[in-house]
Length: 257
Image (cartoon, rainbow, N blue to C red; front, side):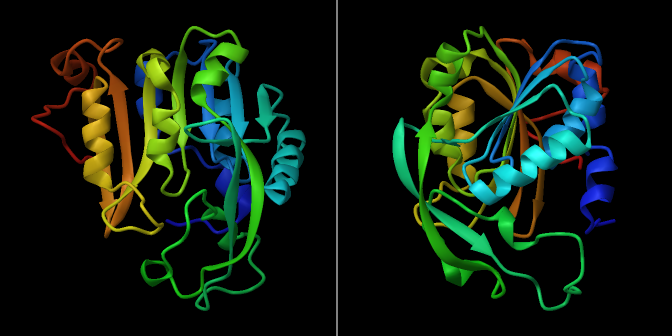
């Protein structure tokens, strides 16, 4: 059931909880990245699953950054750090397109912001987006790369990346450079149509991930958009081993959301 309430959403378990607990132990000291963290909801969920982890939220929109900090305090998520930058394929500054809006079929008094979750480094293709979704504002944001994150934070590996970057997925992944080999698991959004100009489509993401040693182990499409979960074969050596741990049989890829 869809939950359109901030508190209820944050206090509900992440749909990836069971899967992540098959990969990691609750008390593990993980490094988790939430890229495109918006209000920080997903990071707070992960902080409850893995209370000894270090979680980093990348969020470039100032209004969202305020909400992230408020939520960190409200939910006492002391293992979360906000990094007020966008993640891309290079350091510098970039135009960033701010989304807003509210669907007509939902009450205006809901404690939920429908419109702030579609901002992107890429120019929106209005013909493929809902009519209620607006992009009336453009700001300049500072960008960084995953490559720099590894170097600046002096870490050897990232255990899990949650990526919600509205079409900029390949920018983020390319920006990891050779450090992509040291990321264990990645969850990201995909689309079969361009919601943003020059957005990589599902097949482009799959090809990139396959060529960089990742297995697609979970995929769900809801119409033209969906989510995918990848594991790095460097850490999870064979699909058959992973199958036994999940008690599933995979051929090339399986949808089991």
